[in-house]
Length: 251
Length: 274
Image 1 (cartoon, each protein chain N blue to C red):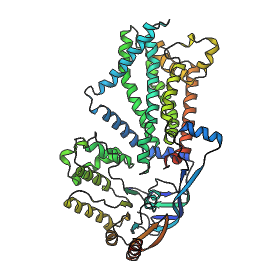
Image 2 (cartoon, rainbow over the protein chains, first blue to last red; image 1 turned 135 degrees about the vertical axis):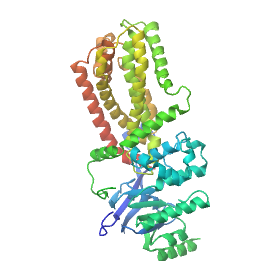
Image 3 (cartoon, chains in turn blue, brown; image 1 turned 120 degrees about the vertical axis):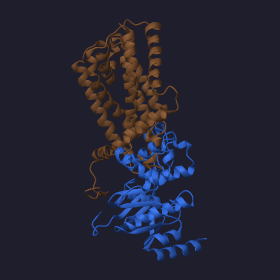
Image 4 (tube, one colour; image 1 turned 180 degrees about the horizontal axis):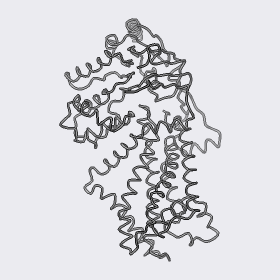
């Protein structure tokens, strides 16, 4: 755990710009010809513009905003998927991105094999995943199917396994996407219970969602993003109210 | 669990060259799991299973040997083994690099979503081809014995040959992978290039058959030395000469340095495009 004096996440005037070729040149041959003719031009698309943010350990921050506002880009920046094009990002502690459940799952592999593969994709070792296997499988309630290829699983079973392996972690910071709870009513309650466990243990949580109710219930602070900039950053209730009002007006 | 809190600071970074290498080391378990996955997926639904890996090169070997020793006669003693010694290396090289070029989609899909070093996919491609190389040694031994040749003590040198060849292959693989991440036609172009390269390298023919005015093409081709690295111990039964060793090590190191530099400098830009 980071000392309380140091923030878990700091963004200092961070920007993310994507280079978008004005004409999509996909082939090397075409690129070479155009390069010789001096006809290469790029447009730039700013997904995040000069945003600054300090999150203290244990804060639960909701991120809201319309599609394409930069919510995913913000998460990618914190999860180290993207380096900032400008500004600075500091993250203290281990980060678990619960964004891509079941990433890397392969139908031909068994449940057990997929758990190990997914774990190594997240940077864990095989030995560590084997140690955690029993707990993961017990949570997913898939003991009987562990050695069958997951192409034989139902969608719900795959989702349960994906949730179980992704949340069987003890990180300092969690990045959570909406609609994480999966399966039937009973399993969904179990998912929510596990998420609440993270809150109780004082983890820093960032959650992106469209559900204002959910955010009001679980977050202490909310950031509203639009067009790559922060519109508002403050107590959950205030920002949610303002966002709601804006959304109604826009309609 | 962890002694110190890991801190990521985007402003404080080493040379890309070093940083990418460190990340790859951290994800070494992923490389092994990817190799494991590819092997499992390839053979899970095939009846012949792992036997197919050996049958496949065996059939290839028989066909090539038939063409180049019976149809087109060359004055080379024990031609099947002469040819196969070079051919097992070439198969390893072309499989590994071709496979690396085809990993860009997979690597791109995942690399866009979570943090991971994409070079892991190149290494897993080389690792997969390495497994195939080891398996193809079984039919190779069979053919060596069948053709009346012997297994020499010089075979013990082969692990060194394999390491040098793998280093060279990793470099080329990284280079091709990086370009293929950006341009869709690279994979296809590379496939053609490899075919041409195959015939410019003395694999099906002996270097001495090349007319003197074209000899330079053999002499300045790094593949000549890499092939010799396998042919000397497997076919001739002696250790590779100092020149062969020197030039193949130089080629391997140069390949890895260039491949890794291009990868480290460009992959973030190429990989993150829309």
